[in-house]
Image (tube, rainbow, N blue to C red; front, side, top):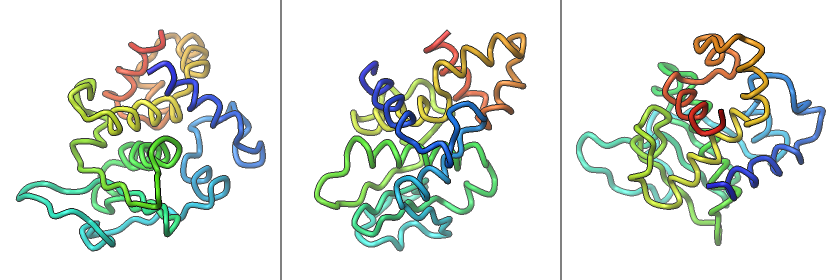
Length: 179
């Protein structure tokens, strides 16, 4: 996953300073998607209405999807309203697919279990989903800023989650990865 980490760092280094100065937190993931990449982020009630959306089994849902040919990221509106940190992670996850996996304009549809910043390690996920999660974590919680804030806040976990607008599970895994 070190290569994914480096790709996320290079990506963030390319973001113009008028969008993100590289220091202020939380990382403005939606502004980056919109103003840097030209991707429209939409909160949608029923992601199954997306062109080419896969059929889902009972109890399954989509958290987000990338429609590269339309230049859009769709986010599950219910999840976004209920869990704002998950919305940020879903957007960053889809940006991971944009940077790492978009080929031929085909959509990328991510089930809730795949875009789960609260899942246990996500190593059971298929390669592209695991890579998109790793990219999302590195994008939202850059290693250098995590280390800096960890020292600055006296290792206050709740403060770190608030500063990075992250869930506790995602922050815990990120700290384990970079500290």
